[in-house]
Image (cartoon, rainbow, N blue to C red; front, top):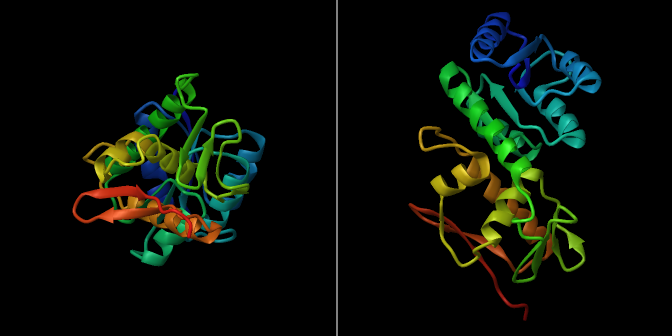
Length: 233
């Protein structure tokens, strides 16, 4: 059987369409009318990926995302009918891995699902070849602690933010293109259009600043990003 996917959307037509589309590609899909029903099912038997509509009766998708993220690092994709920047930012901040605005082509959702599940498989396959510790400026990545620390303070990163920052710390002087980061961290290829890299790095930059770190993330306009360190004065 294929990877298990839970899908919650209060619109029956969309729920049935996505269920059918994903199931036809070999996934084991369970669909729910509400986030509360999905949460209850997840507590009994976790899925490998979750797709959530933001606007649902009962517990909204953002809250469900936050509750899932508190107990699991599975990929989460949020859906919304509103092309709202606030919804997008809130979704990433609650720990979602990506975001789609309705209407969208089911093929785009399928590409994102495949990429995120492929990333999970890649993460599971990593062994001792991965660095135990990485250092840059006044921050340190510890694989043992599964965290980035500034001094003795843990930077409050989501797992996706942690994955992205630690990836950049492997070659901290390098300029990374958006395409490379999408491929390496999310598993997306160039055909998947998303702002997830920009928003995730914006949040990393904010959290480093809140921690008091001298390390920041610099934008290279028209290309991508690189880490920037500074000595304390």
